[in-house]
Image: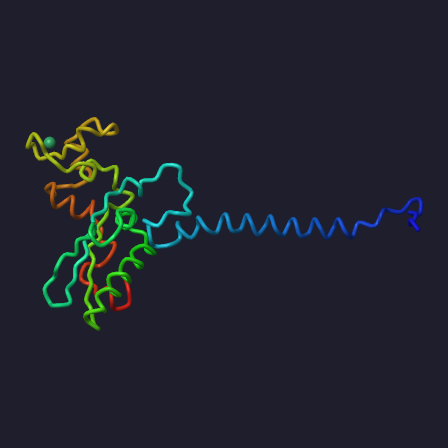
Length: 200
Ligand SMILES: [Ca+2]
């Protein structure tokens, strides 16, 4: 039998109200995740892992990284040929300095080395341009084709009208090489650390 609403009273809102409550909760959780994930990048200490950052244009993608892996188990460092040991995709991901990839690669080389030695010593050189320095002329191109002591990166810069003044503003009295090493390179993985002792 169909229930009849008494004139002058509101219909029973309980089911709709419950549904709205769950919808609101879902929206709040969704928004919280959307905010928390990018914030983890901005509040974290790894400038290179920007998978969840709010960015349309990424200086991290412009950062140039160099990577080498060494086997130092025998005492002397022997460079491992990455191209022969890993797929190029892994090497390219490694050059983006993502911690998870570095850990995975370190684990791979350590596991392989343990097949012949129970206490392997694997080390990695992973240096990158800090994201906030990729647009500096000295970091963009440190070559000095005309030998005037000013990196070519300043001549090609669209934001610098006076290459000499811009170079001095960025590097002070340092020469090109000194400035490049101090401003344009950062060790993402400590060079001296044995990756098989607790990872990267
Ligand atoms: Ca020059």
